[in-house]
Picture 1 (cartoon, rainbow, N blue to C red):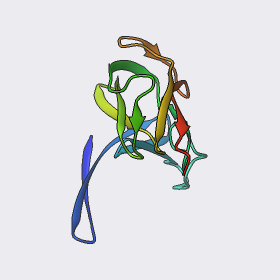
Picture 2 (cartoon, helix red, strand yellow; picture 1 turned 30 degrees about the horizontal axis):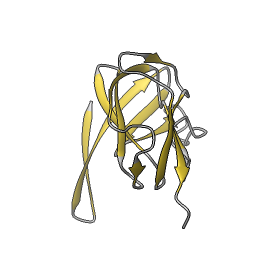
Picture 3 (cartoon, rainbow, N blue to C red; picture 1 turned 120 degrees about the vertical axis):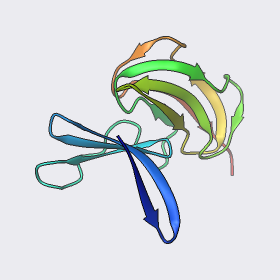
Picture 4 (cartoon, rainbow, N blue to C red; picture 1 turned 90 degrees about the vertical axis):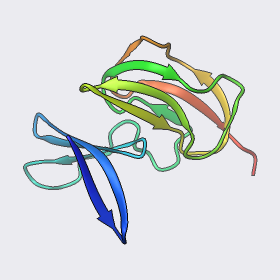
Length: 125
């Protein structure tokens, strides 16, 4: 289901799903989880790292679009691929600026939770 939240006068949208006692929240290309029973944040799941050089699958799903090519320069927060999971479409973004080093998936491929999809070589700054 889609939820809307207003924070400091700015509206934000997120997709939310409850699966096996875990609340999954997908917003701005990131996935967050929370134990629905305790209300505590779950241990970080794949694809939620702070400044990771690897874009990982936040859940099992199907890759529907790859938006970058190996060797391409990317900016932090740039969309790199789109996947479909739980009957919704998710745009995955990179955490850091750099060069796409490797793409380890293909359009149409079913990927598992935590699979490394795109590897970024950090910019030398």
